[in-house]
Image (cartoon, rainbow over all chains, first blue to last red; front, side, top):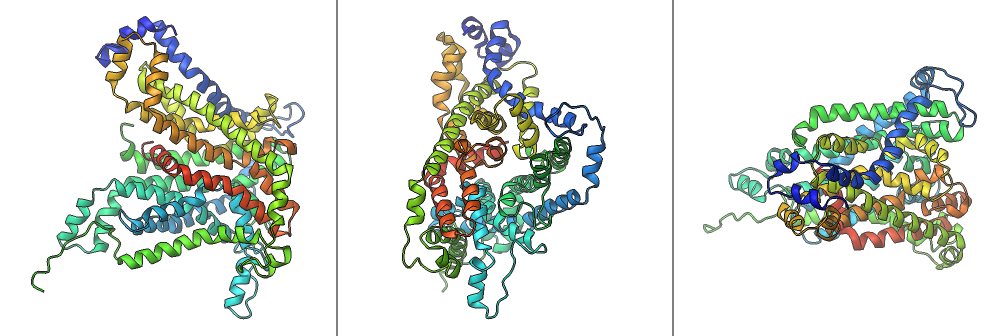
Length: 313
Length: 285
């Protein structure tokens, strides 16, 4: 590479002097190292974002040229579509359920497994296992458990006499909750692992000395463990929320957003319009709206909840 | 007794005894494992047996669901495609992300932190949301219905997390090593390949296994990009198989079992790296 001489110069012990000496060879080396990633990343991640906004301004079926300019009409239509609004509502229901049920469950498991316990490694392996399975596999597997006659219905029928088969995935009133159970089965292990890592970074002496001082176990958890887990909790809330807002795979495999749109999420809505009805301009507008919702949420959340954890990062 | 001094043992702080904790864990483990067991077992049953007795042991054991799949070309082709996409994605992300992370960790210049922020910003823009514009781009590039149409976007969308993880590992390598290498006349490239990368092997392993899991399980991208059956990856295969055999749950669950087996085996071997990657990526981000 070009930089034998320049790097030898730059390699002086003081970082400051290194920073000042930016010559051409150094710049070329840095550019050469950055180029491959910058091309792929810029092309596939950032460029499409701007394209989406542009396509969203047209009425377009994806085949002919872009001619039918409709301004912001697509965006207005998406936002005023009852089905899209309901899809957003479903995303938010999944989000709230995740925060209220999935995360506490994960935290509880992490506290129970704790630092030392017989079989700890085994339980860790088991709890995290579903996370490495694909959402398609998970979806098909849970579709079987939700089978109208077989699966869970058969099991309940054995215990409860005259059990009427529950339409886990066919009853619009409960389909979202059935999906949420499958989602929890798959993702609780992920948050569990993060909490476990967070717990390990808390010095055991803190909890032990609190107990020596006569604090009850519950108080130790409430006043020491959980506050010290703060950064981890804030992170899992963030990841869980962003994930909930973008949910697609599992729902598509299990219900395709049905029945009658009762489990539609923003992503399945966007997929339907883009790849089944070929309203690509409209789909692009929906994509951008989903992105903006996630983006604004992320910025606000980081601004108000995570700035302390990431100060200086 | 008088001599009873309370000796706090190092244990979990949950206010239930050891037995209670074990019980909770066993119940949770059962809930996690039971559906997997149901899949394996029902894969060994005939159509009627599955529907009528989904939770009993297979009687008689029917191997044909499994052997039919293992004898079919489609399954092995899908497995091969998934493996190919996974290996190519892993190779490219390791090469590209480590080169970029090297600059972000070791080569200061004005505007570098801004550029780094730009790289990390992609974390907020995941594939699921970008799928339509990404598809249109793939179409313009002529990559629809090719495996490259999966590999390149996967590399791109894994870039933020991978750069983040590797940068952290590179920052942990002492500066003195770098200075010594340059004094000895090494080029930046030599320092990178001969010293930095070998020392950051745990970081590379973490990125590699996360990439492998991500690629192996990716569904949305193949769903929109791949049309012809000969290019299908395993998740598409599962989807197609469950549509084709819509009521023969024995066959479907056998396919599900075979599809998840490679992931489970891989996980049992690489658990440590996967978890290290996840915690490094999320907690230091």
